[in-house]
Amino acid sequence: MVIKVMPVYGTRPEGIKMAPIVKALQASPNFDVHLVVTGQHREMLAQVNETFGIRPHDDLDIFAHGQGIEAVTTRTLERLTPLLKTEKPDIVIAQGDTTSAFAAGLAAFYQQIPVVHVEAGLRTPSIWSPFPEEGNRRLLTRISSLHLAPTSGSRDNLIAEGVDPDTIAVTGNTVIDAFLEVAQSQQSFESAELQGVGEDGRRIVLVTSHRRESWGDPMRRTASALRRLAQQEPDVQFVLPLHANPLVRDIFRPALEDLENVLLTEPLGYTDFSRLTAMSTLVVTDSGGVQEEAPSLGKPVLVLREDTERPEAVTAGTALLIGTDEELIVSKVTELLHNPENYSTMANAVNPYGDGKAAARTVAALEQFFDIGQRLPDFQA
Image 1 (cartoon, one colour):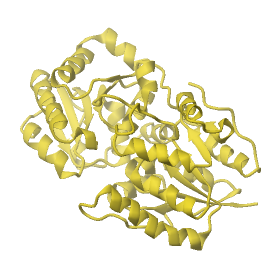
Image 2 (cartoon, helix red, strand yellow; image 1 turned 90 degrees about the horizontal axis):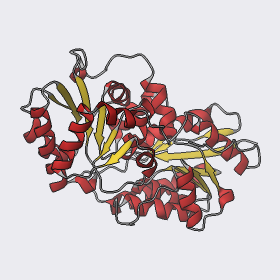
Image 3 (cartoon, one colour; image 1 turned 135 degrees about the vertical axis):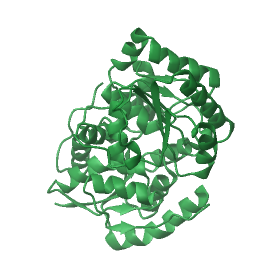
Image 4 (cartoon, one colour; image 1 turned 90 degrees about the vertical axis):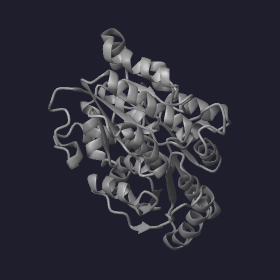
């Protein structure tokens, strides 16, 4: 019995987290993989797929300049539905919390095709934060048949909401599978902008900020804090890959581009970003994925958010929520740069997100779902 599986994803973070699963499924004789991308992060996603040697079968091409999340939903529904009818997959795999992931799950649900939710069970206290991601993942839970929770905490969230425990497998997060594969490879930077970074011996602080809730004043406070830090710490190299969104660039460029020890780059390919993370002393970010990746290399993470759906790293001590208060950003970065004891405490905390075997657990969970195999033991941090 060969199971036809249709993974659907479209953003760079989704591509990174789905790549180990796609490769593991393609390597199994039990599965026929028909890969669909939605196309909203075309260039960045293409870089990820190329890194992992993955070629999509179909591209929904849903991207349109200035479109809202309602357009992402309707375009995904309209363009994926004919493929579902033609290809007739046995199951659809959606990852995470994007609007296109929810819409892909909804399209499959409308065709009465089971949905697998990868990275299921992440929760914040409010459905409005982060928006729309928290709503997307809660809605996707309700229409999924198999829930692949990255941690025991995520599993507990699902059970508390009434999800059948037999439909949940704790896999660890596939981002760790992907990140370890790439970060541990010995490669030079592909981006010309990064040539020479780290060669002068200066410590590196890697910064990313792009999320919707960070737009406007929160991001301006972050930019102001970074300017103060760069002026205060001339022997530290701050590297900030800029998101393509003009709302992000129009804040960070004027605030930071004149500083010698601040490097503003174009969006980095996954290989370059992974290597840069490995070289960094610490990471300051509002990204969910980076909160998971950096601890696997012993990098403390300061999270530019008021709350997080990934509390395990905060509990473990490898990440700290600092929000976007200018004074707090300055004080916490300064503390980690100059207090070896506090730095060591965060750097040596255990990564609660995975052990690099999440893809294998995912394949085994799918085999059990179709009664052609048995699950592997759940991941335990």
